[in-house]
Image 1 (cartoon, helix red, strand yellow):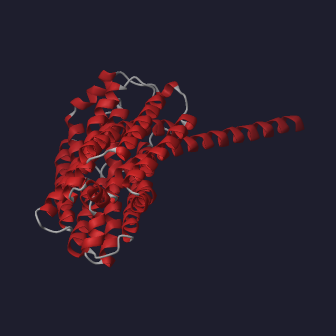
Image 2 (cartoon, one colour; image 1 turned 180 degrees about the vertical axis):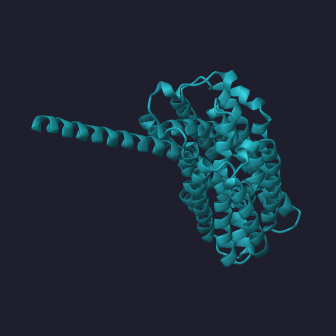
Image 3 (cartoon, rainbow, N blue to C red; image 1 turned 90 degrees about the vertical axis):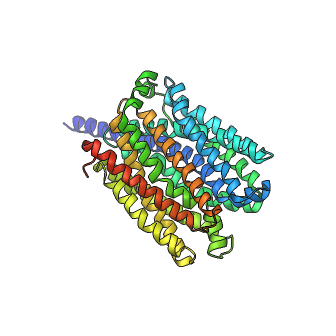
Length: 409
């Protein structure tokens, strides 16, 4: 009797140790995925934080310097479906490693680009891996956390990107001011090498992560609802970038603050994005539409406040937090909707989601730049974002009417 009890106790201890080891392994895998997205987010948002430095260093005005940002976004839009489909049969672990290597190369080239044209080309190359990375990362994260938690899984991968807006982008902005924008891109490339090593060490080698036939992935793009959801994302989320792109000039020129306030403003925006991502990931798994409606609707109110009173620091700083929080609340819902529309193509759906968000990047930066160039002032970028998000909410209402099974809150 005592011997049986002892054996049972030993078995229980062994199971507990096994569970702890598995939990630790899952945690390290999710950390590696988030670390990779942190590097990607730092590279993407750093360009916005050092926009004035790029403009001065390359001898161009600020609207022209935004072409480097637009080129990166265009790289994501092109690369998301193209790279995903070209690598459809690759194991997701192998794909993630290849994408991170390409990311490092793009940032090295950004650091040595002699003029705006070659910088734009290097930023385009840097953007190519992003959509496929988040698509493959979301698939690996879903495998790690288990079924029924795709919103939470995507939010965990996106968590690295939002943390980049709190830590990576402000730090890159500070480094740009201290050591120059070229060295900033070089530092990002070095951190990308660390992310590559983390992915190599901690993403499991598993047949469960094998690729899928190209035609299976392509079939998802024949569904109008998928394109409708991408349109909603491209329009609605553009307000993030219409504001974020011009944070530096708004802080220094509109609010008349020292440039040392720019990293703080970027960090507040990032804190808002992180909070919104946390909330949105949980809403997305529980409700088909509530996160998106709440996010877009609240963003309109915050953008109006920013457009009216953003010249005052006590309005500007909370409004920047609010824009990040409200818009990120909507993004996990977009990912879950895409996955439900095409469950047989999770990697491509993750990739096209990021492609749509980078169309939003390009649209937002362009629309804000055009409003400023037309002489309406720096805060007119917030009103450009307001109009785009309003269009996104209207597009959501129209597409939901055609997909009622996804419209119920």
